[in-house]
Image (tube, rainbow, N blue to C red; front, top):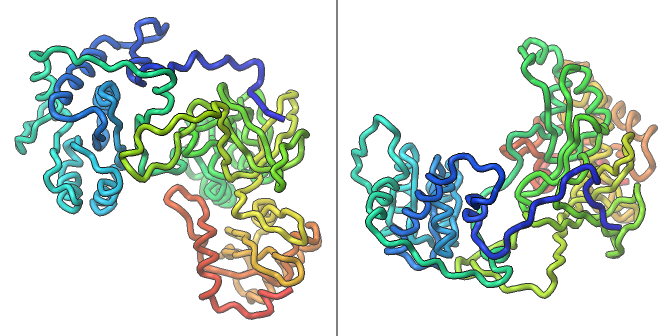
Length: 465
């Protein structure tokens, strides 16, 4: 069963397959263009200048500023690609990216120029040309480094560059951007949401009157956590969403008129999803979970380790499906539309006696216990069941601080094991730790917990059935 967006959503406009990204964005026949002519000329001027120095198949690296699109569109018109650098990266990290995808020039904004210079010196490209993006108004270019505006002035006296025509479908296969970082940003991930509702009294001290929407992503938000968050912020609409780095953004999202607690919303235009079970069979029914495979025009071409792979080989299968590594299911919401529910990551699923157990469901139940500030559930080997679940728990400081770990372990065990299915039972496999390791965006790093497990002073009965 292939799932598609609701019929009330508009279809995507025609995706151009034989022209660069910038030409499509600046097309004169677009209904909504704002100041496109100056941008178009600026891109042409930049293209004319850099065409004199670099060959089309080489890569340009730069750090972002307002002229980001102008510069990148000019490079795309030449047939090049842009290596996108995260301004919070260290010089060592940037130098490492240079060694993997060697650029022919670097553009940096004024405030990031020292970082760019250090990165160039640390890389194997110490003679890499370095250019400064536009100098802010009122400031002087004391470094005497050529700026983007300098290049544009030179280009005004140069003839236009003759663009080479792209072959059929080449634009959909030619790399436009190399992205060096990924992750959720700007959205509330479930661990942060849980911390917010657990500290409702503290949250109430802040003026949240301007907050109208909260978008939750980066993992499943249970309907219980949804309800608790709604209780502490009754004026706020909570929208669930889902997407991947590889899909270049959100691909399912809740609508204000169709909020289904616990779901990640409905599919957005241009998105198709199918689910595969453990045997690779396509799932044909609702309420049955499987790995999410996605097809969408925004899908990345793949993971690139060499600049020589900028033009990927054509594929005979135009209907390409990307295996996401996420487990999900579809469920019909109150409005009658099918909503996507994210269950967990495949690598985090635990197979107990042949049954697929989602740690996220156990975590969603444990976090409701007043003694549990944070929790993460992983699988550990078991001779009888194949695997069993084990919970890492951060104690809530205000809850019965005089209670010993053994007593609290029994309390949490009884709370969990008396309510959940046998395959979800923890028994005594509960480990108390000071904090759950997380990424910069707040996502739990369960691989770090697995590494720590062997070094923790854990009583052997906790690791047995």
